[in-house]
Length: 126
Image 1 (cartoon, rainbow, N blue to C red):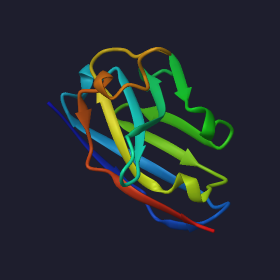
Image 2: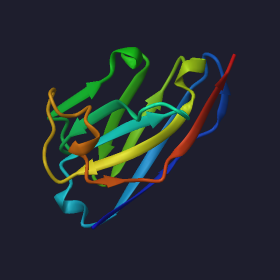
Image 3: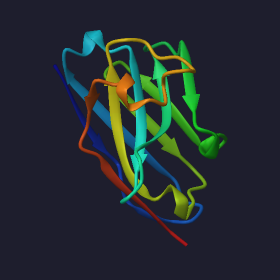
Image 4: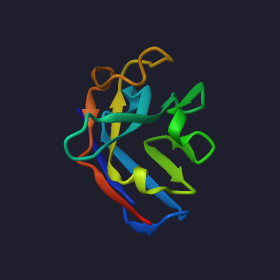
């Protein structure tokens, strides 16, 4: 089992920056793919970014955050550096992990991830 805890969510103004973190505990040696998803009320959970392995085998970003967000991982800790934040980035951000690898065809699917955190709220005001 893997337990994920997110932190770093806050309220910021448009153009601001935040760094989210996710700490994994438990059977972390088996984690291969880790990712960030986000969700707003009434909408589907959306994949934001993912990273394969601990040595940057591959990273993925959804188009709307490219150039603004960066995903990174140091062992059992996952990060999402968010810059130039926009009101449309407002959401609850969830950390996810999987024992299997992910690729360009699978990283955006919720079913690709077995473990989930409870989320951290990011609010961007205009």
